[in-house]
Amino acid sequence: MALALEKERLFFQIYQSLEKELLGMTDYIHFSENNLDVYSVKLANFILRANVESESLLKELFKRTEHYKGLTQKEKNLELENNTYTEVNEVYKLEKKTIYIASEIFYFQDKYSEPFIPFKYKKNGKDSHKIYNSIKHDKVNNLKKADLETAINMLGTLFILNSCFFPELIQKEQDDRSKIFRGKRAYIESLFLSMFDKIDKLNKDEVENYLSSCLYFEWISDYYLTENLPYHISDISGMLENHLNDVNLPLDTLIEKRNKNEYLYDDLNYPVLFKYSTVITNTGEDINYFRKKSEQIFKALLEKQEE
Image (cartoon, rainbow, N blue to C red; front, side, top):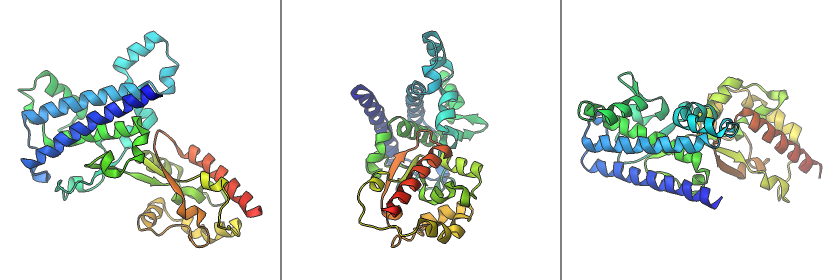
C-alpha cells in the first residue's frame, strides 16, 4: 500500500509540474478564445509530455480492472500495449467525465467558460491521440496541431486520470488538487429518496449519465448514522410524503435546486440528512451502488426512529 501511494503521489507531482508550466505560458499568451489556435514548439513538447503521462496512467488504471486480473501473464503484456483505453473507459466512463476551468487568469467567455469533456475532444476531425501521434512522428510538418486548445484538453485528461488513480486527492483543498480545473460533483442527496420503489420516478439512464459525468460524489456519511445523534427524526414516512413533489421533479431541476442550496431536506426537521456528508472520488460506481447504500442508510434511519 505504501508503494502504491508513493506511485500515486509521483504521478500527481508530475501533473502539478505540467500544470505550473501551462500557467506560466499565460505570461506571454492571453488565454482566451482568440488564441486557442496559437501554436508553438513549446506547446508541442508540452502536449507530448502530457500524453506520455496519460498513457502511463491508463496502464496503471488498467491493472486495477477486473478484466486485467483475469488475464494470463502473456495476455496482460499484450493488452497493456494495445487495449488499456477501452477497458479503463468502460470502468471509469472517461468519455463522460466533465470538468470546468476555474483559473482567474484564463479569460474564456465562450467555449471553455462552460463545463467540457476532455476525452471527447476533437479538432478538425482528429482526437487527442491522433494529434499526439502526428506531432510525435512529424513535429515540423504538424506543428500547427500543437495549439493551445489541444494543450488545455490534454492536461484536462491528465487531471481526470490522476483523480481516478489517486482518490485521496479529494482530501486536499481544491487549489491543491488543481489551480486550473474543477471536477463536476454529483450531489447524491438529490437522488437519495428516488432510490425507493414508492417514489422511484427518475429516469435510470438519465441518472447513470449524470453519475458517469461526475468526478466526485458528495454522499451522506454512514458514520453519523451509527453514532448517537443529538437529533431526532420523528417520522420517516412523513418525510417521504413531504418531499414527494420535489423528488418527482426532473433530475436537472433537482440538481439546479441543489446548486442554489435549496436542499430537498428541511435541515431543521431532518438535520442528519443535511449537515453530515462526505465527498468521495468516482471510481466507477453506478446507480446500483448508490441504491444499495441508500437502502442501508434508510434501514439505519428507521432503526433510529424506533429507538
